[in-house]
Length: 433
Image (cartoon, rainbow, N blue to C red; front, side):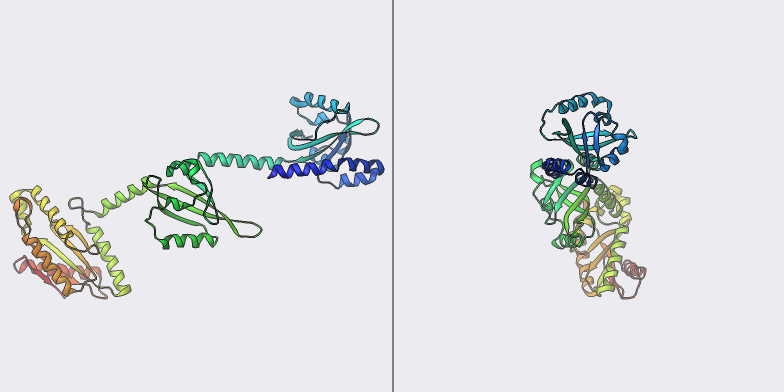
């Protein structure tokens, strides 16, 4: 786009160069007014500069008087001075060259170099040939292009994903990491939408909230669970930034950056599982059950949704360990856990409280129904053949949670019910109000 603008600009200037000279011949004053009011550097030279405008003088750092005592090649660095000098003399001999639009460096008086674009032509002037030229300082443009080049290189080499979409979500640009991480060929992603990365885990409501946020002009940051081309799940820490048109303030693009944090998430999930799971029975541990208890209480306070709690204790478990060894005891604990888990609902929460004690939170269940569930589970245990055809029984104490009481009060009531069941002969269910 920049080159097209330059090309059209040079064509226009050079097209009007000869009329400008005619004006100069007709009225040197009129020409000077045109040149001096121009923001473009203009010059005419023979062996020395014979005319320069203020814009050209400002560009070089020399005064107009200083430039009129200088050769054109004096503004060229020493490396290119001789070739340029020969080129100037060829023009002064009257050789015609096609209009050229060269990128070059001018050496300023301060010895700094300036990126410029020069266009020059051969003209007949004052009974001989001369060169006329115009110069535009493109230093800022070159610097910006260099910055863009560096940014593109940095993006292409980044381990993080960067891609740009239009306002409809169509991917217009993607760096190498986008293809590498998701496992697509380079030509398979551009023109698609990020929907090709959907894993099916997030809901429509989730994506609706995402679009609502970015279309309002706000940045979005979330961990997205996506999938690769082979179906492998990948966790992406994703940031989406809307880019607005400065004039219309409408969103034109979205810049998406994402980092693959799959390994970290899997480690965190593994650590979370270790922190919340009993290592022997692989059911919830005491810590996790207490968290579930807090969740149930919060929901009860919010929606009056009832629940009950059961305490299990294996009767005479010490005798099992003493008679058959701890290995047999561990097997029985595992089998009991599997038996209870397979006979409760997914919404119920079952965990090991410690030793041979277990806890069951019955979701949406009042004490009458909870009592029936406890009896059913007690009978299942009594009838089951455990390790080496061994049979065990359990004592169960239970209660319903009541509004206004603390977690500790409810647990204490269930524990007292369990103590009563054991005191009354074991292998029975007792509920406390």
